[in-house]
Length: 243
Image (cartoon, rainbow, N blue to C red; front, side):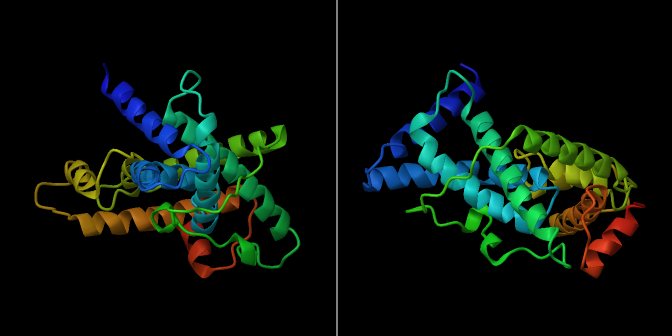
């Protein structure tokens, strides 16, 4: 049996365990937490990509997607998609829902970068998982799907526009950061291979590259989607990318 198949069977087992309504036993909570810990990184990455690397919207997306996963666990059908694919689809749909609310709100405010009070949330690593609220975002319309495709195109173009010099190589750092199987130590090794023999980097430097790359990505995607940027940092990031 392939590694991916084994992993999917394990994730499916965990889903089945905590997907039984009304069961609040310690074993169910343990399965709940294990599933969450194994999927949190993928949730974060998918949410960031789907929201154009907007940290605030990604936090809200993660919160809503996780709640939908919890409430929909009993309905998961392994014959239709793997658990990871199912989770990614839910996350993407919730991101579109969050984006729709955000852009609707931003049309009526002077500060397009400010979120409504009810759109604050936590990244996956901060969301309580023992007893999450019973919240589920609505499935998107066809128009939402089209807009989601526009976001993905903007993300691809902005990724290609990131500086790809030897030091710092923001583009490669961002591409590696989107690989859920790579740690910062792994990323450091890969980036080190692109540098001259007398230049050395560490994981903390790589974290800094990824942070700056995300800032540039957010500014670039915002401009391509017609969003206004209220903060100097975002505007600066856009200019640095030559947008």
